[in-house]
Length: 102
Image (cartoon, rainbow, N blue to C red; front, side, top):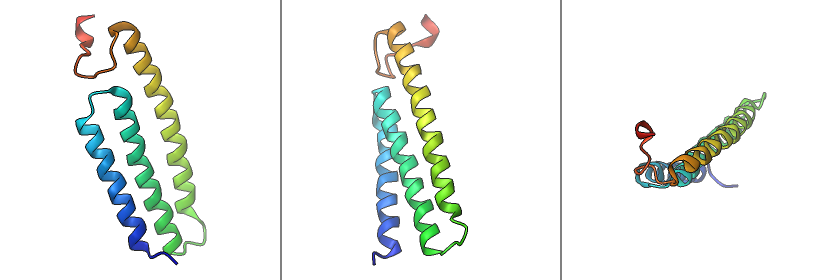
């Protein structure tokens, strides 16, 4: 049996990589992928604490499903926004996007 600390360390590493990606990426699609990493780290935490705290109602799993659904919806909306901005600004680099100059 894998101990709980291994899952929490994996989640912390994924969360750190996601934060690093959000803060250092210049590409809008890369930023969206980093946000998904952060959401997946949160899901690992939810499922881990649900398993190791032996919750009889599986509330952690249900919350994880909601996070996955919200993450998929936000990724779709974010990708649509990136495509719309790309059509107007001809770039996906966030530092080159000047929305006020359109």
